[in-house]
Image (tube, rainbow, N blue to C red; front, side):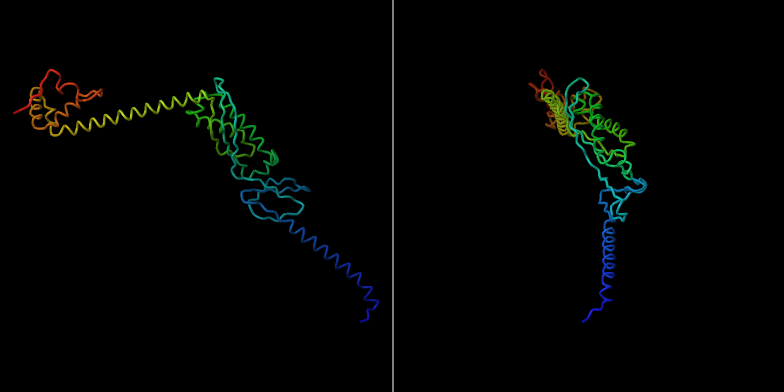
Length: 286
C-alpha cells in the first residue's frame, strides 16, 4: 500500500492533538478522584481553603464522602468520648502525701472543631492535661486523707468537674465526667484506716447479732406463752399469782415463759434457782 505525502504530513498534527487530549483527560481524571474526601465514623470535618477563605467555620461535615476542590483540604477531628488518666502525688490539708488516680472523660465539642483547631490545634490534649492536673491538686489539697480515701469522693469529683467545666467552656471541649479511680496512702495510714473500717464492720455485725438474739428470745416467749396471755394481764396481782400457779400445773411450757421473761440477756435464762426467785418455791395445783 502506498502512503501519499499528504498523509505523512498530516500524522504529526493529528498525533499531537490526540496526545494533548489524552494528557488533559488523564489530569482531569486524577483531579476528579483527588477531589473526594472521607470523614470516618466518629469524626467531624471542616474545609481549609489555602487560596481563599482559610478555615471554614460555618460548615461541619459528619461521616461520609464529600466532593471538594482538589486544592482544598478536609481536616478531621475525633469527636468520640475519650478518657485520660492522671496519677498525681498531692499533699492533703494536713501535709500528708497521698497519690490519687483520676480519670477525666472529654470530647471535642460537636460542631465546633474548626474553632477548636484555630484555638488549640490537634494538640489540644496538652491544654486538658494542664487544667486537669491543676484542678486535682487544688481540690485534693482542701481535704484530709481520710476524706479523700472514703467519705468525700463524690464531693471531690464534683469540685474537680466544676473547675474543669469552667476551664473548658469557651475552649470548645466538652467535659463528660471525672472519676477518682484510686487513692494510695502511706502504708501506716492505710493500715490504720483499714483497722477502723474493720472495727466498724464488727460493731455493725455485733448489733445485728444482738437484734437476732432479741428476736429469737421474743419468739420463744411468745411460743411459751400459749394460752396464758390473758392470765398474765389480770388486773389483780393476787389473782394473777394464783392463776399462774394453776397455769403451771396445766401448761408446763409456762415455766419456760417465766424464765425468758426474767432473762436480762446475761448468762443463761435459767439462772441458778427457780424462775420465781431463790427463796420462793414453785406452786403447783392439785
